[in-house]
Image (cartoon, rainbow, N blue to C red; front, side):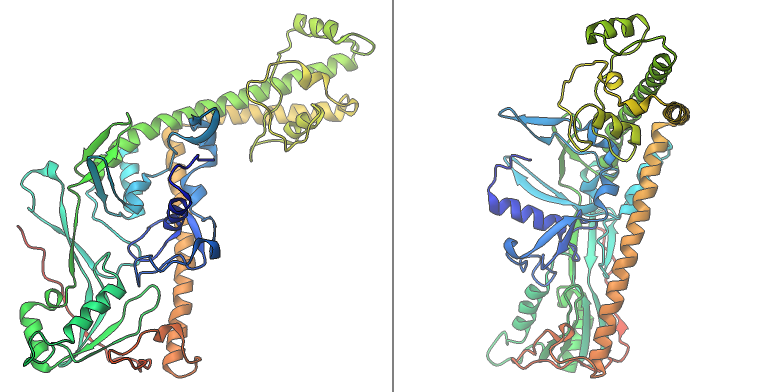
Length: 493
């Protein structure tokens, strides 16, 4: 429960934003978009009403936020109710993967997206004590170019600027094909720009372009624009990217974030953000190791006490039948047994004996133990009669040996190695997701190809656009290979 203060609509918008995966949104969407969560046609504004769409944790969520770190989160208190933690513990700095734009009282921030693999590599470099490599903004699915503008700022601590260009091909002397727009320039907005080019600036002038057609999908851009031959020549002289507004900029001069002390700080580079993140994150890997070690050592004590208890009862060294519980507990104290808490609810690392403890202590194995419970001998005195068997003793002894090996392994593991292992697992999950996305993209392209050959039903998504004059645009035959137009080199300013 997050005790969200900003209303139902704001909450729904936040959830939708976490699930969006079109070009220019998230590089790593933590929620799965089951339904219409928006497209690049309108920059996400075309998402369906929240009551019609569904979501769940995406495959990357638990690779980014490890279950082993849940116990380390510091939960806040809201009027006596435990709510969301002060912060979460991602494996990589998520603010660099998905970017951030926002305003606050007296502050604003704008952080571009970066390639998860570039960020992961720089985190590895930090862990190994190596110098980080400069990173360039990167957006999943973007087919244009992003170039660093060298020398834009005199001082290195002011940040950098990057030139962003779309992609355009020249088909013939009158036709161009626009297949990518600059980042955050949405398809519908660009269509309106082309509509403006079809209107003459003056009454006695001809429009700059004569026609355009659209063959977009939800994830790709495809305009075919025709114009008089002399206008295309003029556009080439002035620069096609400039003439058709296929240029944009990205800046890293306004990257403000809360630092590890909770203070607003300006960062001049993404590497500086990685540096700040890693210093704090490594502390929590040490805490994870300490918590895992404490858990395993307590489990060893529990198992050792159980074995001793069963053997002493079986051999008659400890009598528990027909005696008061207080007297038995005094004997257990004298014999050096440990008073322990009841078994807490455990995750993947829990054993059958842990679940038996929960059942033996009068509750369901799925029940959550109350916080602040007292230590006692209940874990011994509540064991069922069938536990007093040699088979049970052998089972507990085997488990004890396994726990001892586990403790030795944890002690010999460096927290940095834990982090590196998490990064490897995250990249493996990312690769699986990319393979699945590529498969879906290939299926879409196959549908488009079938539509071009007339085998698909009319009205397919590949022919969604309309001609400029209001007539439905037919899906074109395969266009002749155009000549790609190189974007202008990033100038020094």
